[in-house]
Image 1: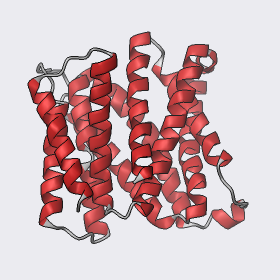
Image 2 (image 1 turned 120 degrees about the vertical axis):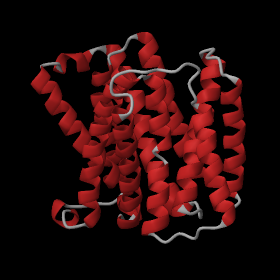
Image 3 (image 1 turned 60 degrees about the horizontal axis):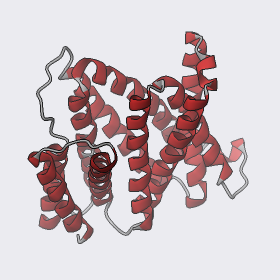
Length: 284
């Protein structure tokens, strides 16, 4: 359960960092690239076993790690386009609802037991998520449906791949799995920076600080999630549900406390429903 709480905390730090980035006018792409570099370094730095390329290259989880890395950078671009063309509200709802995909993947692929209590908890979790991020105003823009739908699928695939990787990777190589995943994203990000001739943007001190914080949190969210999936004693579908509920509820509450973001009655109901869903799921 400790790993699950650490994963929730790490993911919440990511959300708060993005919020600060937007408010402080820090450029987004440079901190994304720096974040992947830092996360890659973290993965290698905590690795406590020796390894060689020959030993690792044939492991099935290596390919999974590379696919995770590719999907992470794709997800970043989809998020950016979705915010621009569909609005931030639709983007947030799509990103949070994507938890449905890894939940279904875990139940179907790994034949997890489906109980009445689990179904009630998962349904309440989805309802709570929707109500918590429910926008106060209605945004209609070009691409409102297509881009959020693409984001929903992209983020859902990423979480499902992380679950697949958790079943493949040996415990001692979990840090290496994260390093390879983020390393692939870092290589792609650096390649794009070179093509766009924006490498110097990586040298600005505000971007460096934000990128380091984001990278540490990003690495922690994946590393602790993999550990939670393997060691919490809970079904993966339950872990994904509790994690998403925790991140959303904590992010919303911190935004209310520190950024004075007002919540509607519907949002507060969503928070309460989410807490109830988390309690039910933890008891499954």
